[in-house]
Length: 280
Image (cartoon, rainbow, N blue to C red; front, top):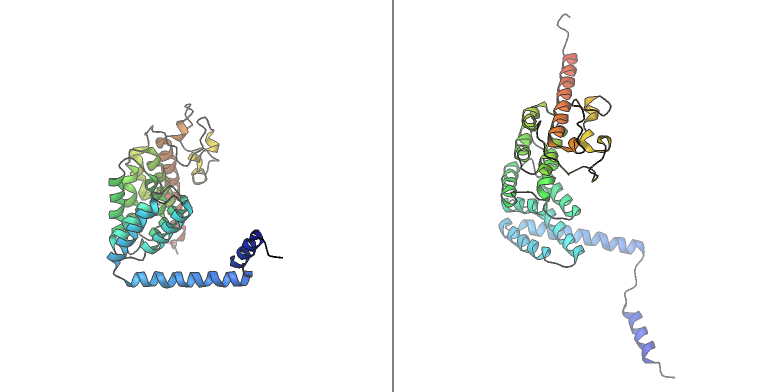
């Protein structure tokens, strides 16, 4: 009996469809893919870096226009990993632009790449940050992310505080807030003079805080520094009556100053204890 067309088509599809291999085979293929990726990465790095930077800039623009979000993320993540190995200053600018992307995973890869090269390319990063302020005079994702990234730089505390200074002076309180947090993370009393002008700032921030406008301070990030103050959650300043008063830049800055002051005293006390007794 002649085989029907449907059966013939089904048989043809089953023969053409690749069968999945064993886990070991698929894993081996994945290793081969990673090995080939490293090889291609190396080949690009061996080419003139200005030409490669121009190529990935063009690829960046194409990726931004893709409708396939997964493919966009795949390409931009690859670009971020490659850009950190290029000596062209424009590659640093591109990494900082990747920090403006709405996808967290892309900003994470770009931020990690910037941190990785922070020691040897600090001057270029500084210029790139200036460029970011020029591109976005109001605010953008990059300006929210950068203070936390700067904290992780392999650079002197003085250099990192210098990089944070323009963020503390920004007009957007949601840019100022992470910069205040970054100053505390650096655990340097040298940041106190930078924070003091903000102590009476009444602007309300939204970043790193719960969405409820009537939240209790105990549920809000304004108590992030409480452990430094040693007073079970209350900062040195009394809570104001306003529902949003605990989310003002002034309150955040004051809590940071209190924390850094206490840290300074603690470090001074430890240093004194470590000094040899003069009477001995």
